Amino acid sequence: MPNIASVLKEEIMRLARKELRSETESLKKASALYRSEIATLKRRATALEKQLAHLGKKVVGKGEGQEAAAPESRVRFSAKGLNSRRQKLGLSAGDMGALLGVSAQTIYNWEAGTTRPRGPQVEAIAAVRAMGKRQILAKLQEQPAK
Image 1 (tube, rainbow, N blue to C red):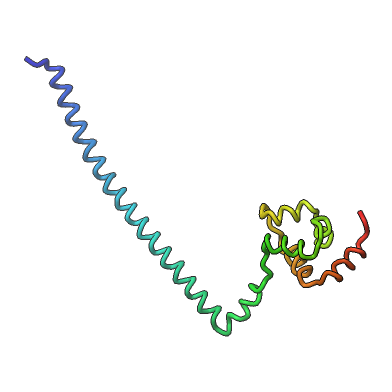
Image 2 (tube, rainbow, N blue to C red):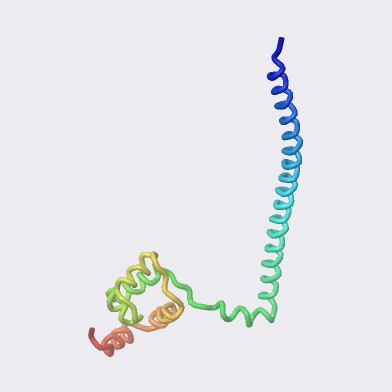
């Protein structure tokens, strides 16, 4: 014959499980709904970003975009290009650094790709790129020795 305490305990556990199940079901449904809404919002955001990029390309393609495209015609920097140009000119990293107003270590870092030059330095690199070997040697002669 079962003990009344054990029967009561089992009944309490059964009712507690039933209550918890009903509570967790509503939480599961809400969680699924939220996940679904989040996924929908992410899809919409992606679609809007694509649409914005597409419209941006259209604007740049028209006459108005020519004014906006002009600032984008900046000089590009390539670590490999800087190294090859320096070697072609027969300059040491110290000489190239003196031309650009930076240290030799900075030149090595740029060539290794560990760092990138800032805007004014990229412009200076472009100016050196446009010079010939004689002009560069003359400019190095003009600079005071350190």
